[in-house]
Each structure stands twice: as C-alpha cells, then as structure tokens.
Amino acid sequence: MYRGKYRLIIPFLLPALLLYGLFVVYPYLRAMYVSLTNWSGISPTLRFIGLRNFQRLFQDQYFWNALRHNATYLVTLPFIIIALALFFAFVITQGVRLSSFYRIAFFFPQVMSVVAVGVLWNFVYHPTIGVLNAALRLVGVSNPPSWLGHPGTALAAVGAVVVWQAIGFYMVFFIAGMEGIPVAFYEVARIEGASGWQTFWRVTFPLLWENTRVALVYLAIGVLDMFGITQTMTEGGPSRATDVLATYLYQNAFTHSQFGYATAIAVTLFVIVFLLSILVMRITTRETVEY
Image (cartoon, rainbow, N blue to C red):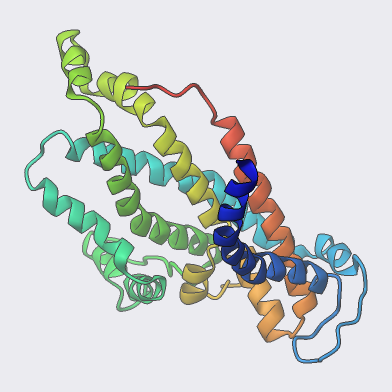
C-alpha cells in the first residue's frame, strides 16, 4: 500500500523539488563557492583562495561599522514598530469613529514602493525646502538640522521612515488577530472591573503572542537587510553613517568589482539571519493559549 502511495506522490513532488533545487539550493551553494574565490564579476575564471575573504572581512572596519548599524536597527526598530502597531490596533478595535479610514490611512504607506518612500522622505528631510524643517522653523527652531546630511541624525532619520512605513502593515496584522478573540473574554474583564490597559495586558496580548512572534521574526529579518530604503535615501552616507551590510555588499560588488568579497559578506549575512531567526523562535516559545 505504501509503495503505491509513494509512486503517486513522487511524480507530483519531483517538478517542485527540481525547481527548488535549481533556483534556490544551487544559487546558495554557488554563492558559497564564489565567496571562496577572488572573482571580479567580469573574469570568466574564478581563482580559489580559501577563507581569505572571510579573514579580510573580520579585519574590515567598514564591515563592523555596517554590522553595528544593522545591530542598532535590530534592537530598536522591531520593538518600536510592534509596540506602536499593537497600540493603534487595540485603539481601532475599540470602536472609535472613522476606524475604517484609519486602517486605510495607516496601511497606505505599505503599498508604496520602497524607492517611492525613499524619494518622498528625501524631500521631507530636505534642509531648505523640506516640510519637516519648515515646520520646525514655524515653531521657533531657527537652525534645524540637516537630517540626512549629518552623521549624528542620518541613521535615526532612516529608521524613522522604516517605522512610518511598517506600522500600518503590522497594525492590520494585529487587528486581524484581535478580531478573532471571543468577545466573551472582554465582557468577563469588564465585569471584573479591569481597566483598558489591564484588559490589553492580561487578555489581548497573551492571545496575540503567536502573531507577535511572527512579526518579530519578519522584522528582525527586514532590519538586517535595509538595502532599498538606505540606498535610495543616503547610499550609506554621510561618511558611512548609515551603511548597512547590504549596502556595503553592493558597493564592493558593483563599485569595486570585488564579487568574491561581496559574496563572502552575503554568506555571512545569511548565516546571521538564519541563526537569529532560530534564536528568536526559541527565546519566544511559550505555551500556546487556545480559545
């Protein structure tokens, strides 16, 4: 009986496995091999140099600078985004007026391309014609900062744009989870005299824990990339103040024609993302609350 089952299953799985191997597994393996060469991206030959690229990488101050920026995003942005998304989702699900409008307004930045968002905020942050500095001058700030032109503010300015774009998606994500929670739980909380904050903390949040775990993993992976928005807004500047691993990889590959070294950075980034995803899932594992 089991032989007949596998004869039926394997022909259906084989095309998918072949496509997966061709377009996913093979490129990964090829990238790992390229990271062990000094390929320029142009030469038809790849000279094997072993782990020399990785030795250079761990001695590269620009690599550590970019990794530090990714780490800064990692310990700040996911928690800010999740906290704000949960807050707005909870408020909207409490029956406020114009809730449908708020959902659309908050979600709208998510449907915009990253390039469009970057260009838009470049104008917002512009030191002379930008809306932000114009508003600051109206309230009495005579010399507002050059947000993207100063190393002290550029990283935070780019991070703020990511928060602005991502909140809407995760707000809708949490709203979907909240609307699935039985109303009886909230009625019991009201009867017991629980405040809005106590209701959220003791009822809503525990029942949304699995949603929060998923959001945390997705955001952690996203902030370890940050290529699109950073490349569009600052290209890693000024003075590498916003450089992240993805932009540094891009510079080595397409500006300096060091594809072997750039691929070593990409492999390192892949390992970091993979291990971080496993770590987050293990740390956040808890008993599922069923309802």
